[in-house]
Length: 337
Ligand code: DAH
Image (tube, rainbow, N blue to C red):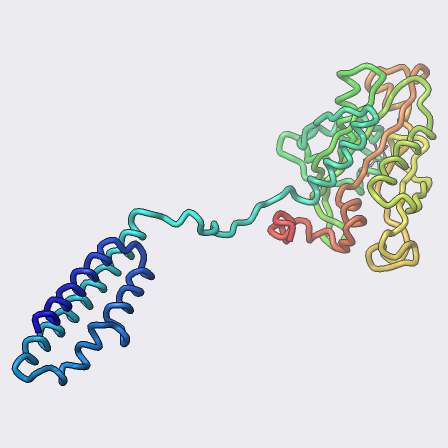
């Protein structure tokens, strides 16, 4: 009897001392299993109480039960202790971070940057104009006097002081030539505005990239060479390009450049309006009147100019058939999903 009593005391001490050094909930559950589980020594003592001589039974029985209760209590307290300490003092540094989205540049910005770096590689320098212009720079200096019919298709918003939201990036040509002498290789990307009814290919605000080269003896073939170099790198090499004669008051001769529609390969689809071609820019040789308005000698220098539609190019490259999506679903464009 004394032995059993001692043994129960020993079980208690040993269990308590294991609990004091246990560090995790798992350790404690393991201790509980070993000391209080079905196959534990304490449990077998409790089950064999009936075999103990009757006069000793109450004492051993109540001692064993008391120890079992104490140990149950001690294990649950230990579990609370480790849970509490892991929450308050040791954050789990191995936990993965919360997911977050990395944004990226808008597709129009990326297209602009790509065209800029292609042209920088062949000596063009970026210039910036202003979005609020005077009628002189936007129209008159570009050979579009007040009564010129070309002004009709470039109507825009006028501000109270008579300035206007520029309808194209071409005024930057004038501003640049006024402050620089030839030779010139300049590009000017930026936002432009027009009075437009919104539809799948028109918005009252869009992006252009202007180009201007002025030097002695610049020819139309130089213009074609530069534009073909850019087009071949923006689109696949085997994609055809074509120049169509056109009219702009500030160039003579004038042309428009189309690329074969990359989606139907010229067969005709809804992206190219069933023509097989996508118009991406206007261009030409700088009109002598424009040189005169900036004080250049029209007999000494010649030049070419072009104005690209950034959205048009992005639409052709990414199979986008509606210009409105660039500015409506901004989140998708910015997250790249
Ligand atoms: N400014 C013209 C437009 O918005 C595009 C353009 C055509 C620009 C011919 C040029 C050019 O520099 O030479 O429609």
